[in-house]
Amino acid sequence: MNGLYKTGLVHRQGPWRNMQNLEIPTLGWVDWFNNRRLLGPIGNIPPAEAEQNFYAQHDVLDMVA
Image 1 (cartoon, helix red, strand yellow):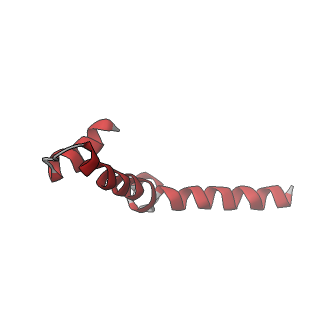
Image 2 (image 1 turned 30 degrees about the vertical axis):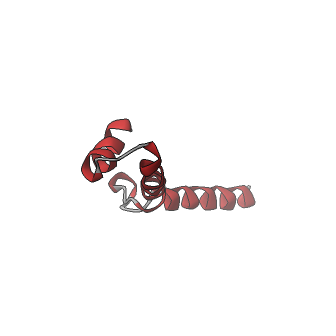
């Protein structure tokens, strides 16, 4: 995870003057990684969407039982 972060943000968009200048871009990277990144093994959908689908299916199964 750290290597992906460093390669994708820190090294590619740097150099950074200080840690405060890196804070907001880091939050944007985390948002992209969790909510907008397309993940092939789960059907080219973002992880957040896969999680929503999982819990929606889980709720339906609870209603059936």
